Length: 218
Picture 1 (tube, helix red, strand yellow):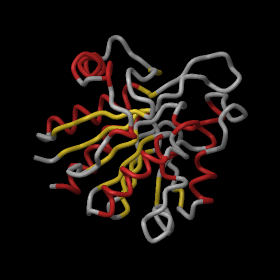
Picture 2 (cartoon, rainbow, N blue to C red):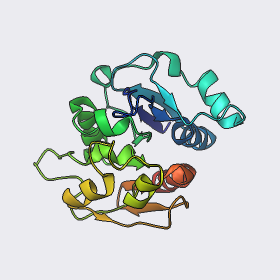
Picture 3 (spheres, rainbow, N blue to C red):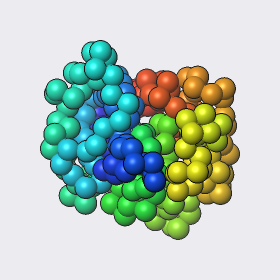
């Protein structure tokens, strides 16, 4: 059976705004639904373990409700405790919290490196590619070097009023890491596939990213 791991942020403070953040529920719930429909065994992981903080919850969304009720979000394992062996894909869900704890987490990097180097797929959506900006492979090269990627754009960040709150602008950091950031119009569905790397621009792209993963692993 194909096995997928969805990674969630554990960071809950939105810069200096006094507002809370976390993982964007739809960006985990929609891939979870797509993967399960494809027959995958789907697990969750978070940076700190336990119940990660949520953002963007839509209480009228049946997919989100199913995910929150049955996916095991109340007690996720810590990334440090996860053995990557056997996973065919890791997908980094977005949410602004990822910008603080994804880039430098050694265990998320360890898991993604293992999955990728064993021939699996690394995927990320919206702010989830923050997990990739510092990711190096065993030979010391950057995973993103020379890759075409999507991610939350500078104009999208400006439109939500958080340009000066996030620790960096994701699109700029992806470019600094050697990737070619390929933007689409703000808040439109956009997924980019480059080899075994699949990235999506925003919440509207979560299903498209998951569908692209399923196609790659078919």
